[in-house]
Amino acid sequence: MYLGLDIDGVLGNFVTPLDIRMQEWLGIKVESPLTTWQVEAVTEIQFAFVHDRMISEGDFRRFAVYPHAVKGVELIVLRHSICYITHRYSHIGSEFLDEKVRKDTKFWLKSKGFPEAPIYFEKNKAELCHKLGVGCIIEDRPKQIEELSSVCGVMVMDRPWNQEVTVTRVYDMIHAARLLGVV
Image (cartoon, rainbow, N blue to C red):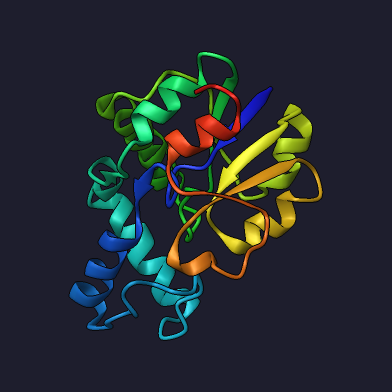
């Protein structure tokens, strides 16, 4: 099977650095742990500012890896082909920042020891998964899960902000490997 893997919220911890940067740069303390993906206390413009500044500051090179993420992906590639599918892009439309986040993401995956695989930077993950023939994707964001469910299988990585989602739930990447018949 061709398996898609989201990065932020599945393999790497984007939320903790986002929370720190929101407080540092805007003085806004978001709910922690984040229980909804939409941060109501932050406007779209504020989020775009913080997200794009995180790109420019190199934060996407430094995110922590969730426990068992590398080992789980290493196990999965023993039986399945994978690709990384991320929603990382400049919210203000900067080609410079888009290129920087692409380079930083490739660096992060390699430096953390994740297996090599194609990386797709895509706003519309469902359309991409359909085009690529992805059989299943592991995702954490409820809106993405809803859209992806119409084109492929979806496993939700268990996080505080997606508790209302009712598709197959995984608790780490080794658990995902077990459900995919690898372990």
